[in-house]
Image (cartoon, rainbow, N blue to C red; front, top):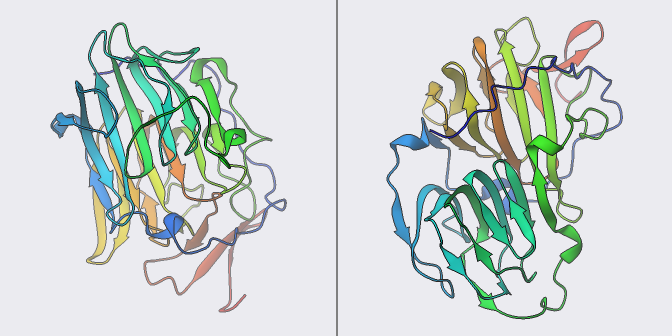
Length: 321
């Protein structure tokens, strides 16, 4: 069990500003749409086994729980663990993008000192390190392609150093409103706060933390159940959860109710409808998308009737509208 934030005893910011400033992104087929072979469901990562892992060019003594894997590119989402006094003294780079979100312990990466709920992003070819931990570390860990390590003193030519995110910490950053991209038409839902960790300046990929309080029938601020879809994958890890969370998913086998506990995880392919079922608790989650976030809404899993939010209420669109 990781430490808790107790959900921070401050009022919830209501995100209700107009959404006219953004239009749906033009998402190209590829990583953003087909990064996994299908829906990935983990009720809680507590039930997964720690396994030794080996990464070319890195020392032994690493272990991880595999959350999901990109079979096409070799990318992987891990819950990684390093024991006390683990060290990797070389500087170098990975051949793919790397993301780290520290859940507990400490992790030093060069001159960066990551503590609980710290985040760092290193684009492919960007040199960083050495890496070490004094007390041990458990962290969410992503590689966009097959993990490796290449010892080097300089970035490779063309490396996207400008996209690096250094030592971002949850407890030092404010909840966002104006700076978070508008992701649907009409007023946004209430009861949600967000902190943006990364919006990639080249690919549009996003990583953020969202804090949710309760939810009605559809979980999206609507009086009826609606099914939300995204043009890119959506990946969630439930950092903290005060009560069981249930979602309805439009899966190939039909409408399916899934239940999540704290440290639950899902990876949802692009275009898969989902509805948040009534929820009376609070949740703090880390979320990733393969491009800029956007949401469309439908009345059911057939996706025949699209709905938009407006100041006057729900607007039922005509085909092609």
